Length: 380
Ligand SMILES: *Cc1c(COP(=O)(O)O)cnc(C)c1O
Image (cartoon, rainbow, N blue to C red; front, side, top):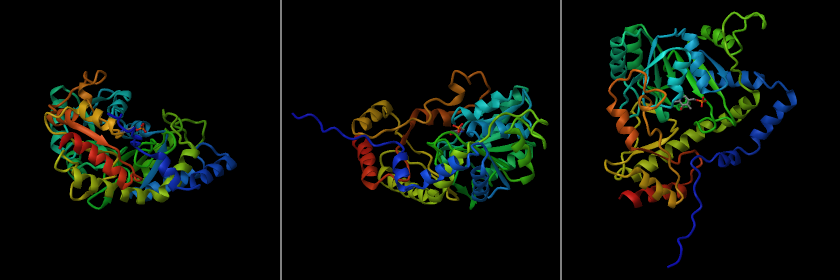
């Protein structure tokens, strides 16, 4: 018997294919920054903020060092006080809860719906009840647009208004998506974004932004990201932090924004094709009818009883990488199990069943077919 042919593994996200598609645009943009030499908060940063504001349909966009800092700045903007509770989904990346704890707040974990991976208003209300039972004063809600699908902000805004809470959208994964015809950036009063390289819109390093609907709130954010500076740089009027954006990253993002709409359309086509061919074997992701996704991840749910490790091993043997986002809900993680949590059957179910497949705007049909065939070979 001959040895199996070695297979060239597919990349999970192909940043080099994107770079080839962009030609020399990024190199040209970087060279311009090297020439003008304004490496921090330079002209490209201001141009990027204008593009992000417009794309998000927001009143203002203020960039910062990364998506975690964007959350921290949003919490500083909202004036979160030590000991106050913040409702957020348990099925998210740790940064959502981490920012709350770093500001002295208490994360109270809510469940999510297996259907769209997001926290509903009912689930947020159940977590508010837990906060009340613990004697905590709830200050706000952070909704997360998991895997690129915006949460139901109409319902969440209603709940926040009724309870006198602020509402922040953690849109680290959903930049470029929309709901009810409105772009991410205009769905909540405050929206945070990440431009980490693996996000739908990624820099060549860390970058983030806070978008606010009320343009008058931008001045405080601009101060907070530079140590709370006042009108005079050395007269500090707030306790801030250092969270300025590098001009080089803004230049990369501006270049990538030129093809971002095309990439989003390609991701949408690829997701539709995956779903068409995988619907019988796994539970494919569902995007609510009034929403578009930025497809930060294409995440399926394996059937009950499927051995996920075995499935992943079999995909790997066929050169198909996969990822598990997330294998443990936050309320089960060592650092976060001390905080209050609502019952979370949805999050538990997802943690045990999810599998994310290769997804990026340059995934060719032949590569998609390899992913589809590999999964079907194991599960059909
Ligand atoms: C990536 C991510 C963040 C943090 O963004 P960084 O830029 O990596 O700091 C926050 N929340 C969610 C949901 C994320 O996926």
